[in-house]
Amino acid sequence: MGNSKGRTSVGLMVLVVVIVAVGNWEVKMAGATLSAAQCKEERRIGLNECKPVLYGKLPSPSCCERVRVSHVECVCPLVTPKLAALIDLNRAIRLIEGCGRRVPRHFKCGSITTP
Image 1: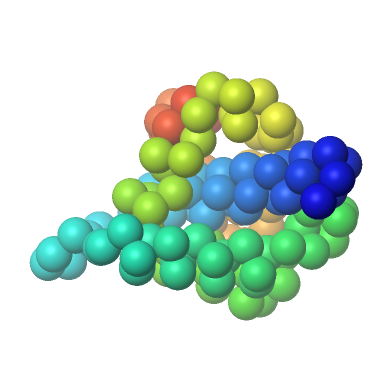
Image 2 (image 1 turned 90 degrees about the horizontal axis):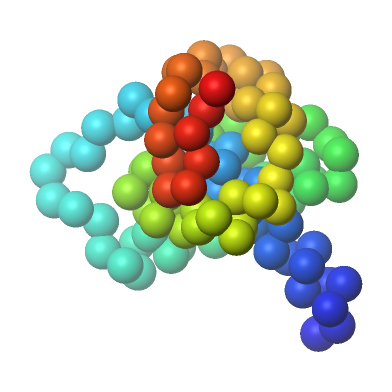
């Protein structure tokens, strides 16, 4: 894998992580905590469903569904300062709102806090 492809993959992961995480501030865990394997699968599905967003497309209905059902606990720990620096938070917020979700002010997810 070349550097350009690696950066694209990281950029995609970060954008999707932010879309999913910030879009799910209201999700409540019912019962037990998700396992590491469950979180990994949830992230994999989210990346697959929302991949076109990286290339300038609007979120598909299936991507928006992922935004609504994914768990904050699975994605926020991935948002490090280094990854947060790679995304346009305003774009991520517009995409989330395009999925019909209101983005709360001052929501903290990993190293990102919404305005």
